[in-house]
Structures are given as C-alpha cells and as structure tokens.
Length: 258
Image (tube, rainbow, N blue to C red; front, side):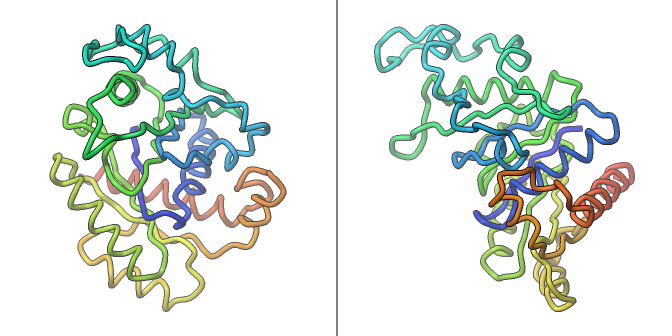
C-alpha cells in the first residue's frame, strides 16, 4: 500500500504518519516512512535519538552529482533526468523498531520552481519507492502534492489530509484536494485530529463535505509529553494507537470498496 499524507502545518500530520507506520508494522507489514516535508520531524516523532546526525538526502551533494552526472560546482544546466536510485532505499534508510525511515529534505527553489538535479533526484527516488517497492510506503508531505508526479500518482492508493477543528485547516484540505485531482489522484480522504468534543467532530464533518472522513484522533496531552521527553509519539499511548488502528482498518475497507 502506498499512502501520501498532507495537511496544513501544525495539524499533527507527522504524528499521524509515525503512528500509522507503527500500526502497519504491528500487522507484520514491511514499512518505509518517507519524510518529504522540508521541516523534517518524522525521525524525532518516531522516537529516534540523535536526529541531528541524520543527513537529508537532498544535502548529499556528492551522491546527487554522481547519480545525475551534473558537472559544475553549482550542478550546471546539464544532468541526467533518470538517475539510478534502486539501490538507495536499502543503503540510505535508517531502520528503527521495524520501520525504515528515509529523510528526503528540502530543495531550495529559486523563482517559481526547480528544474535542478536535487529536485529531479528526489522525485526519481520517490517515484521508485512508490512504483517499484513492495513495502507499505507512507509519505509525510508538506501541505500540497508537489512531490507527486503524474507518473506516480496512479500507484498511490490514498492521499490522506489531516484536519484539525478550524476553518484554515479545512480550507487547506480542499486546496490539497484540488491540486491532487488536477494530477489525477482520486482516492482522497481526511482524518480529524486534535478533536476534543462532539462539536469539533461536527465542524470537521460538515466542513469537509465531499471528502470522506476515515476517523478522528482525540486531543491528547500525551503527544506533547512524548515530544518533551524525546520519545515516540505512540509510546505509552494506547488511545492514540487504538484510534489510528481504527483509521487504518477504515482505509482498507474504503479501498476494497472502490
């Protein structure tokens, strides 16, 4: 299964990705979690120590230069559009408690886009992971679908948008849905997070009219506590794990019914 997760900054997207990866691993699945958000927090959310020592792949300049064939100091204008990446998931992933983690990192863009070796390299790597690998792949994206190309979108089983109670978060969900549909992605779902009342549930369900809601995650002080203590978001948090297990089950039911 290939899952992309998006949402407005601060809604709990990375926490959901970490817990969902844990839940799939509990079911005996091989899991690769991909941190494709420029603000890379997935390693810490999984409880990995010394995260400052993890170098994002976008910063591995010698590797990118070698694989793309870029020649100049600043990579130049000429480089391969289809670099070899098939060996990299095993070489560059960090395995932790049954979950493989890959941190893509950010590409510094100039102007309106980046037709550069770094961007091409990361897109090729992500395409390979989605199209060719047989693991469960969960991609933690920024609030958009920039990492997904038209060639890979057919292999993505679901795009899940994380939404918290509030108009800005709901508005972002529809923006993400529009962008996803423009590249042909139809399996779009939402998960309500930080829900503290029935009113919050109603606000999200009513606001997301047209986007199926897979379930809700309750507001949970233990998530903040785990962050303060540098532990995995799901450590000693049976409620959070139970709620995400239910969301995983609901997702599988929805996909089977399509």
